[in-house]
Image: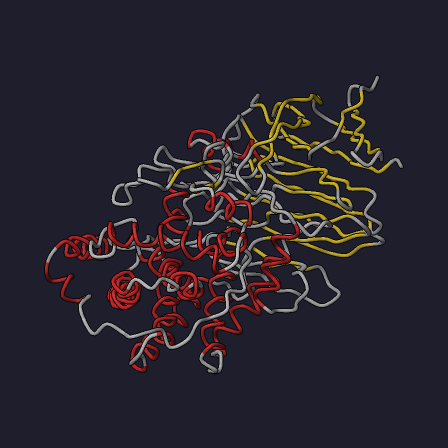
Length: 571
């Protein structure tokens, strides 16, 4: 992305350009696939052989918060994740015919953290050993995906190390040897696989595993030097200068913060200095994440993420040990935040990520969310990345569309194409932005070219939030360019937050909104026809909840479309 120039006490302008270029070239992809084929040969098995360490050199403290409800489910003999339940007694760990999210949860040994949150070591250790031994017998000596995928391996190594008191409480010498040997085999696998990972984010996770192994296993001096160099370089590419990740996904940024926070504890456990590049990456990432939080401290729904509660965000920030304020704006990361009184306005002011950078990227350019105190007023549906028991793949694809976000959608067409295979295609290439503080308000004007080639229009959105947070004014304009198509219907959607009642009004261009706390807001539009439709929002556990949406419909003419609206607090 290229950026404009920001000035102090002056209008801040930028042109954010979607980067071009392909992902891995064909030779790199062929090389990766050939490398994976070697996993089944004696060649790769030989790479993983070596001296078995007697023990771990240190046990890192796990700063990440576990889920006690999932931990209690483990004590009852079943995995419970995003609505799925799977008894683990008799489960075939060689062929987990389970949804990808639950499969990764098992292969990463994330469940160890949840078990620790629900019980003490003496009660939890037998459960941990039962699951771990069955998994190791099935997968420990057979290198295959997804169990041995780079990111799953790295997380498994870190999680097993942090929970090693649970895993190694058994007196069975064969089982204990199997666990310790697995650390060594995973480390050697990551040595080979981290630099070959398919995405820069996967490389980052893989290199973090290499560095952790260098700190926790014997003879790690050379591995540490190589791993730290690889991690520093992959972080440089994965994280924008303003702290966001190139996928623009808050969920992926949360994973990165958790990963680096746990890796940092490996240095602490060994009484080693945390490298500057790691500390600096965390120091940049945390403010970027906080920049997408609402007035209640919870996370908005952007690029596949769901509406995540404030306690989960607070626990992650505490784990990072970074004290920082939320970013007001992040041009590379692509989000704008305005805090006024008890209100927070969030705006997606960047092009969507490239297809190779995100599997759940959304066509959400110029969508916004608004909250006041604990009440989410205008939201996006969210949850496209949380495919699970309640979010089937077909619904997840729908949640990525422009219509699932609070923005303008022309002719029921996405501003950036979502291809049949799920990748993001052509559409928004440039976003123009101007932000300024005016008399007792903040004004943001942004535009995108997502409909320029297909329909001949550019979309401009103007948002003005009063400094007391009690009024938001907006204008949505379709400006005609070359050969604009007339009589095409545009819909400007405003998905409403939970527990908002729409009170009937005798004015067709007006909607009265009654909040859960009893306060009232009024929505008024000039231009177009206002109607009400069904909608939904997705919580952090991947569960959809019904809600409503306000929709303004208007047809294009020779001059395009201009729709103005306002949302005002009544008391």
